[in-house]
Length: 273
Image (cartoon, rainbow, N blue to C red):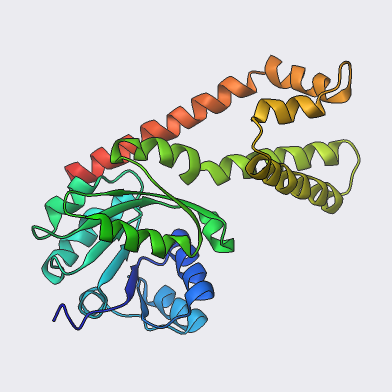
């Protein structure tokens, strides 16, 4: 049976599941990909939109060798309970459930099943995702290579020890929301200053994109890039002074620490279920 299995089953059709699904199909085509979603309406929607089969969990595991678990951490226990009898060491299980350690997955699955834990983010929708992966106890280099090739279709990939995954979740997993929040505030400021919303949005989105490319490609430290914009006695230093006065830096650090702590808590809850 295991020799006949091939391809990929994406289990869970939420935002991150669809982000990975759409990116993979754009890059590699739909051949060999199936989706498994507990909501019949959502399963039918994804099947129609992407031209792939929507299967039940057991059938998906029987057909696909790589199982990508894209469900919420709160749902992982129930999923594993249903999946355990359909999985064997010939599978590769790739989990994107935030905070859930590989040991929790391995304990619920048959002995020897290779598991790779991944923290992706939603820019995978536009092939600019950041995915970070870690190997479980039974996953070797070839499994990591396979998972990396899978995620590389939708952006950049890094490997870290699993002990760093909760920090990764707080930084890049939740990270897009921090930038969207900042952009939202800057657009509101533009409107307050009398600009039309569409113009303010165009200005800020392009500025954010350009700044990100500079950070990626220049090789310079963010402080150097910021100082290059900050003239003595000018407008930028006046703005920076206000940001510091309101404790924006400290608030951002505290927010990321809170995200980290919540990731740890989610993993503990999944383990205790």
